[in-house]
Image 1 (cartoon, rainbow, N blue to C red):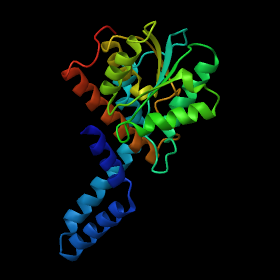
Image 2 (image 1 turned 180 degrees about the horizontal axis):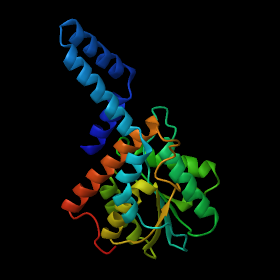
Image 3 (image 1 turned 180 degrees about the vertical axis):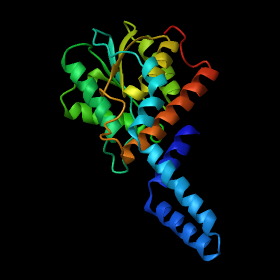
Image 4 (image 1 turned 30 degrees about the vertical axis):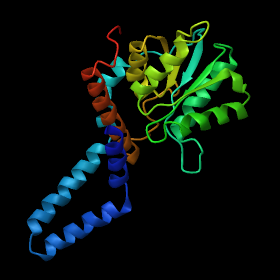
Length: 245
């Protein structure tokens, strides 16, 4: 449920039609004689835009997540797991998926694990893993060294991955888990709950690549962080996360 809501909000808030609709609403209020209401609405919208696109809010809002996010580790492991984040309609990897997979490939090339595991994503649970495998093979990883794990959510991916890896001979227990920094805390604790020894590794060095004091990038980051907070709350309520860290 959370992913479709996040996707809808991102689409609605940053769509040109949304701005056009708000402008038409202001014009209608003025035309109908509600000038004071139109003025208050305009100021409220401007204040909200300034707040959501500001660097100070982004920094403050991310503090609890930053405090819980584990430091990246680069250790010898039984497998490297790259978590998928969806693909485009043409089958190409989305930016986050490619970023995570590239980081995992760099670790694999260092010889830190003999096995690369790629997982599905919320919108395309099976196709994402398949396309990630194709990308990895095209970048020099033997197909026999890649395991695909379908999954709709991080929880489902962790359960499916643990089921597959722990049944291998010998069992695969010690993993390098690669995802984006904002997602790292929830992902690591979820895979630990599934019974794996997790060593987290962030695919990026920052929570966002936003620059300057004001940017639309901060508004998008606000939505992404809000989604993560809600997801963490849901996972904890369902006891899908480990309490070891």
